[in-house]
Amino acid sequence: MELERTQYILAHDLGTSGNKAALFDSDGKMVASVRRSYNTDYSKPGWVEQDPSDWWNAICETTLGLLETGVVKPGQISCVVPCGHMMGCVLTGKDGEALRPAIIWADTRAGKQEQELVASVGMEDGYKITGHRMSASYTAAKLLWVKHNEPSVYNAAERVLNAKDYIIHRLTGNYVTDYSDASGTNLFDLGAMRWSDAIVNAVGIKPSLLPELHASTDIVGILSREAAKACGLLPGTPVVAGGGDGSCASVGAGAVKAGDVYGILGSSSWISSVATAPLYDPKFRVFNWSHLDSRLYSPCGTMQAAGVSAQWFADNLTDGASVSRVNELAAGSPPGANGLLYLPYLLGERSPRWDIDARGAFIGLSATSNREDMARALIEGVGMNLRLIIECLGIAPDSMITMIGGGAESDLWMGVFSDIWRRGVMLPEHLSEATSLGAALAGGIAVGIYSGFNEITKMNPPRRLLFPHMERSELYDRLMPAFEAAYEGLRSVNAILAPMRH
Image (cartoon, rainbow, N blue to C red; front, side, top):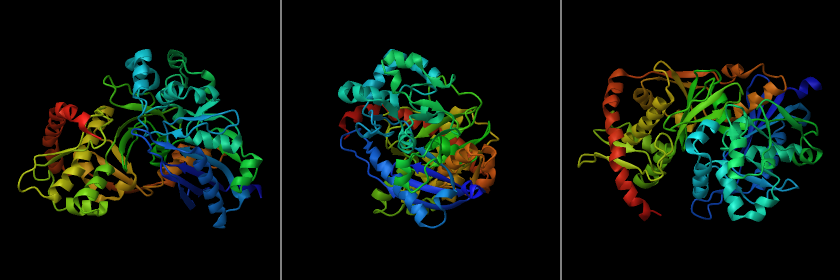
């Protein structure tokens, strides 16, 4: 029976829209999965909140749903390992319950607190300590917002947690986080791999709020009787630290050794590499996560509106057709979109611009321009912005970039990207399961099922390789200066327009 118990790993992926529970066997194959959605509250401009109890209910419902499939018995699950969306703020009280809704990654209310961080810590010093800009996007500014605006909540708080950390507490009763989630708080000393006393003291945050730090492959507790009853599992089942969803996706994509590069194409998009030390960009254009392998780091640049641009186009310029219609239209226009450029800044921009006033634009419209050209320019504009991120990261010209995410299923997008980037693109077997795969691998290493992170090459092997066409790459080389000039030329225009937006 003990041999049976070490057969399966239960990974939970707490995404922005819902939780997916996935069951992996000892060969790294996903044998079953169940998903449950939960709500997101956008009640005020810039506010994006979720109810942590909805996360817990989704954890229990999806676990019970997996058991109902009959694929696995509770005694066959060797460990539970969560991953979840990062850069959040969940404040819990003495009983471990959330004191208010979770302020999640997309929330931007803490602009004043960002300014406080910059004033008290300094952008350059903060960047050198944390590997990130001082920003309203991260946990520190959100925590300060609660301190200033809801002091009774702040004073009652025992811990500040991220999504998967809250779930670990509900499962085990312990308050822990892993290095990858900690690296998205603006409170973590990335070089020393510990909480930053300098930042905590500078902004006056209670040090006791910060959870205990662990490697992603650490067993951080066992399933309590109460949690086991709620989930249908056995008490005493090991719970592994897991990681933030971005770091788990990196591992799931196969980026597990120095020099590996991967990207995700979804609603947003990012490019990330693996390195033995953080990458400190003098212009603060990119940032750094702790890898699931705590000896490594993941320099990264994220753009806001990749798939969002395609969805906007589908909703507004194709009478609400699906995104696949955008791809069909784009296929009818040649490389270069007949002289049309698109700036993909519908939501402002993070890397490499860090410009909240940046907005989208089509440049070069003429009487002969059509929807085909606009759709093609849209894809190319996303690819050009990602090329700037690749250059900021110093990705070697001969690097192969692994792409995952729903958008990676489009041969058109991937081919355009390869041409613009002048680099090969590798598509693994599993494009949409990488986050769960990464979490499961961390769990399997913790309990001895997998030997190390290199096992991902068997769990998610290469499926297809795409290589750039030199003539098209040369065309895009000529267009890149125009893409840069278009953004720079519109900065003053966007600043004038900013107060008029809603």
